[in-house]
Each structure stands twice: as C-alpha cells, then as structure tokens.
Image 1 (tube, helix red, strand yellow):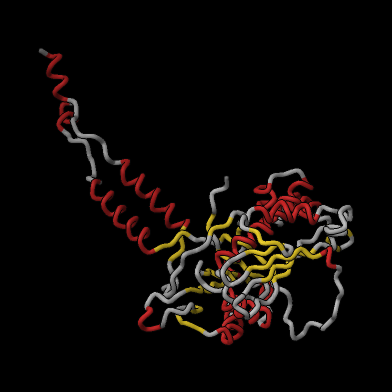
Image 2: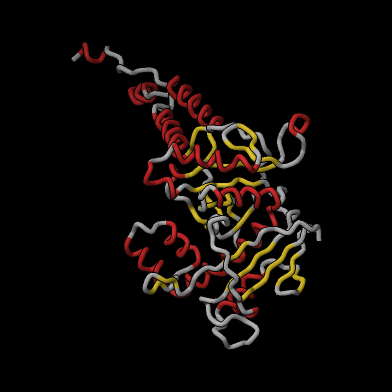
Length: 153
Length: 195
C-alpha cells in the first residue's frame, strides 16, 4: 500500500524553467548578429551570387549605397536608381554624399572609407560605372560589391 | 520537522517569462537584418582628373581582354565564349605563362586583365565575370603559399595578425615595397554602343 502512495506523490508537470533561458539565448544571438535596420530600402535588391567573397573588417568605415529599380514604380519610374540614406540621388550627388559620410568619421580614418554597393542583378553597368566614376572623384576608392555566397561545386 | 513538511516549495511561476522572451525574440527577428558585409572587394583607380595623362604602350600579349556586350554575350581574347567559368583557367594559364607562349603574358607582373563592359550589361553578368577573374588570382596566390583559396581569403581579410601579413606578402611576392605578382584588373569605362 505504501508503495502506491509514494508514486502518487511524484510531480506530474514538466519543468519549463529552462525554456526562458533557451529563448533568451536565441534572443541574444539575434541581438548580437544583427543590426537594426537603419534605412528603409526603396529599391529592389536581388543581390547576385559570387564565390570569391571577402569580408569587411571595420564596419564603422563602411557606407552603403543601394542601386536598383524603385519599389514604387508608379512614383519613381522603373529605371534603376541610386539610394543613399533614405533618399534617391543622382550620380552627380555622389561626391557630396561621400563627403558627408567622410565627415562622420575620424580625421585619420577618412581615407579608409569603404563604399559597399548593393546592386540589383538587373541594374545596368552604365549607372553603376557612373557612380564608380564619381567615387573616384570623391577619393573613396575602396569599393565592395555586396554579393551572396554561391554554393561551390 | 512536522512544520517543514507542510511548507510548499517556494517557486516563482516563470512560464510567462518564456512568452516575454518570445515576444522580444520575434521583435528582433522582424526588425533586424543579418548584416551582409561580404562581397567582391575592389580598389578603384585614382581620380582621372588628377592623374597624369600618359600613353603607356602595353604589348598586346600582356593584355587579357574580356568584353561583354549589352546582351550579356561574352568575348574573351576575341573569341566568343559561353561558359563563364572557363575564364578562370584561361587567366591562370595567361598569367603564369612567364614568356613561354608568345601569345600570352611575359610575366605575372606585366599581365593585365582588361575587362570592358557595355552600359547595357547587367550587374549580374559583371559580378559573374569579376568573380572568375578574382578567383583566378586568389587561386594563384593561395598556391604560392600552399593554402586553399578559402584560407587565402581569410588571411587577406585579417592582416593585423603578423603571420597572416607574412603569408599575404609572400603570396603576392612583395619585394622592396613592390608587388611581384599584382592583381592587375583594369575595368574599362563601359562603351555606349549597344553592340
């Protein structure tokens, strides 16, 4: 009889106290590995694949340019455009933009500014090379074409 | 003793904590992007206005020509090519020729890969070709120091480590401040003609 009574005393509920810890771990992972979206991207971004990727080291020195077809084609047309910090700019404005970005950096690091271009697959080389030409003028020669990792054979 | 038995286990109900954590997690999942700061790196030539205009005669054999037209059709060394991945081995053969074949480069130092596109060429095609060209050079550098292509790229990503710096300089053949094995990729101004 006493044997049965003991069995009835054991707790039936599954301990769930570890669950928040697991979720918190996931949460911290996401908090560390991600950056808050700073700008709303108004252009289509179908990033091309490549195999020979390099990684940027100093993220504070990086400024981003987005090039692609605007998402709101009714308002902005279907021609690919350049987006920098939430606004569309023309190639000739790139020099001004680069200088603004350089002003945000420390004086000693200004020459090391890296421009990361996120270019849509369908964008034409003409527009992209216009931007490159302006970057050369603005003396921001470090460039990175953002690409995705292609599966190697 | 008897009093102890009556006492309940002091326990804080923490089941809602999981819900709160989940909410936070979902918030971060939605509002963030995984930082994608990887891609093909490139160093642009200096400002054309300040550059001295010099006409340098480069022998034809030292230039490896890649041209792409507005329909994304490829022309390599004057011959049409459909398979982009073939460029890699062609460049390796061209750069490592060391004067043996009179049609190919004199030495790795003189070899130049010229890449010309049209204004109508898509960025996708451009990236694909640039990927092959850079891949060929990374492969050659990696072979020189006896590492894999992937390891080479990791090394060149982090030059603050002296060992990495040493390997990096060895791979590129840095001698007396000059690189013996430079990555000469010339990206020409795109043509305006549709062809």
